Length: 197
Image 1 (spheres, rainbow, N blue to C red):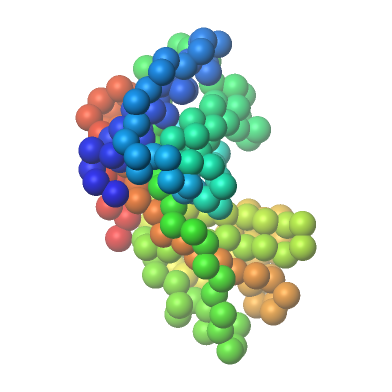
Image 2 (cartoon, rainbow, N blue to C red):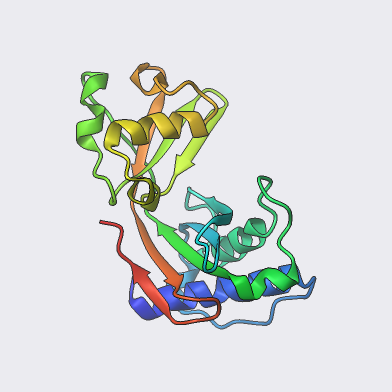
């Protein structure tokens, strides 16, 4: 994705967040053809300057056109169940980040202990699936926390509501995906591509 398209995705998310928080309809927004192609997307809100998570919601599978996925994820991030709903007075104190995802691919290995060797920190995001349990961590998360691949797998299991060693169980399905990440440097500020590796 081109940098200007990534910037447009963040602007679209920011507009949706502003409208959702103020209970307004979002303005019409012209998007390029690439935004009409189905894609997974996540929108993350962080406090500024504290850099603490304030909301993160998204769609890992390419079920919606990119523009719609970004809009829905942005609206959802305002109501992340882990936090109180985002208030209008917080809008000047959060930065918006958009992750545009490749379709998840299942990881197959002969021996489960070989799994950490197949994961590249900073490149791969993880989805852990076991029956009705499912957890997802974006590629930037292990970089932020300084995790190695084994810890990343354990944390993804915990996110799914499983014990940290469930990645070793052959019935647990593991998927990786990649993401292009774009973010505001400050609230309503310049938008940059975020390097995760």
